[in-house]
Image (cartoon, rainbow, N blue to C red; front, side, top):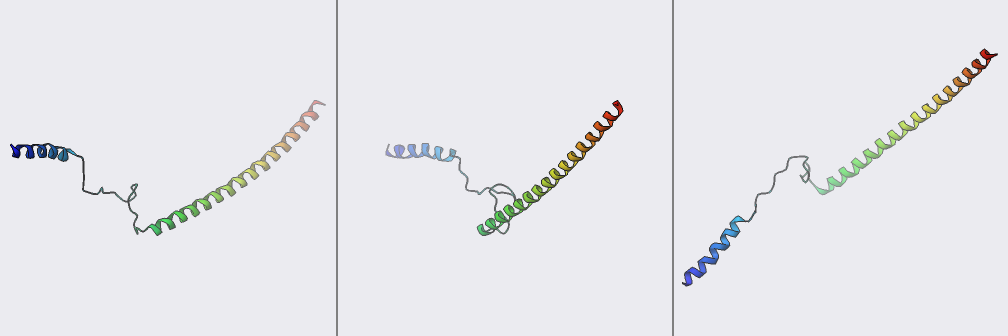
Length: 98
């Protein structure tokens, strides 16, 4: 009787323990996956890489800003030229009406 009362609760708890989702194996991650370690692997190199990436992004942003400014300047020059041509066309139109 004592033996049954001891083994019975253990039998029910062992089923619950076996059914528990648990894994002792670490997940494998490929290079580039989120959470994967980088080659070279220290936290200091991560900081350096972030700083380097930020500097590259800033450089690219500044270069694009310069290109956009040059394009705007060119567009304004073209508009001025078109306005001059419109004035000439208006003058020719007035001369033809006379």
